Length: 110
Image (cartoon, rainbow, N blue to C red; front, side, top):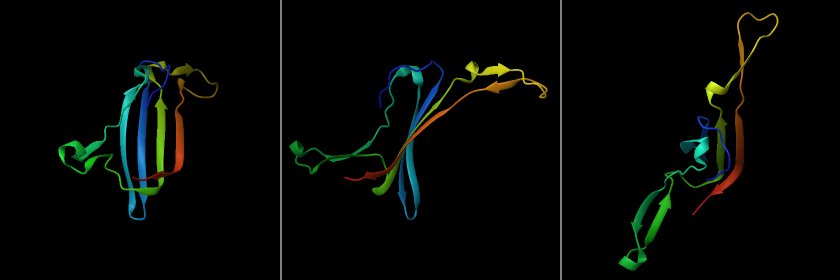
């Protein structure tokens, strides 16, 4: 996954979820937002056709699913939280945000 922009110290988490009747399996990875990309490395199995095999298969260790999900979460650097004084509250209040984008009802197949 690639993106443009991103504050240094902010964290991006991408997760792949495979939902089955028996439960949910997932794989995820983190990257600094300023890096501009994140890769969830697949597992490679098999042998290439050119070497006499049936082909190389890449998978994320997740079972096939007709109800898969991709979650992209951006969490800002805690050092950039804004502190405000609020009447009636003793002590400082810190304001921050978090972005969550979900891609739902995906098919994870071969």
